[in-house]
Length: 301
Image 1 (tube, rainbow, N blue to C red):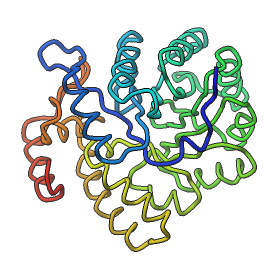
Image 2: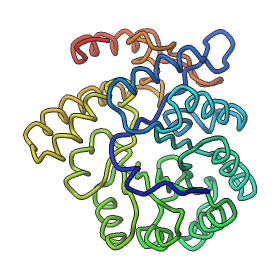
Image 3: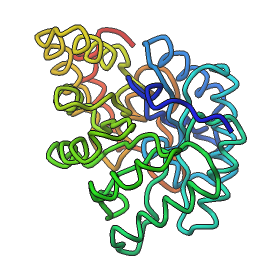
Image 4: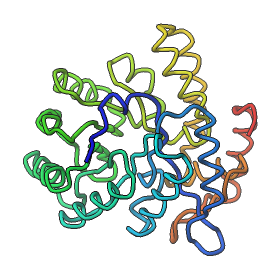
């Protein structure tokens, strides 16, 4: 297996939503195609399906594989595609990561096993075994709001020494934690990516290498604008784009995630607002309020 280079994870990546057919509750291939056209056309560097925004843990393993295969077919062999696996136990994690890698994943995003509290040594063992048994490129996924586990910066540094651990997505919304990770891995070959659109500029200035975030489904041009302005040293332009992005992201953080993003994509005419059953869509009055806000914030659908 050929490992992708860490530098290939640098940039702006979309935490891809999963369009759902409102009648059947199954995957919506046409909606997925429209969404991919939107994000690729908006300048996204990579596609990250079946994560939290993509409702990966609600999907079956077969559905997650189907989403990856559909994305890979649509965007071609050269685009970076980093799907998320979802597993509660080690054998399932090993099996799914290997399956996704074989199906065309550039790397696989993997969170710690949730439910039970875990010491740093246990988190390290989880990733080390998956890395060694699959050989697949892995991106660590720090999302304590969902897993109730924060990957300790020292554990990140230890895991970064493994040849196929190539990045971390930090969705803690904790800039202090992000800085600790950056310091702990300063001598490692690891891509450090924020998972928070509202912290894109702050994270890049702190030294992060990019972002994987939900807002890129709706307004990929803004994430692209922030990244490019920082690269060019134009912090004033980056700040303007960040403020615009933050206003939109804040508006879409309504209901139980990712219901707001699904409603926003329905407003934009990309797909329905349906979530993976049994999750419910936003109430009608909340959808109407969000639509009115987006009418004023987003120039065009």
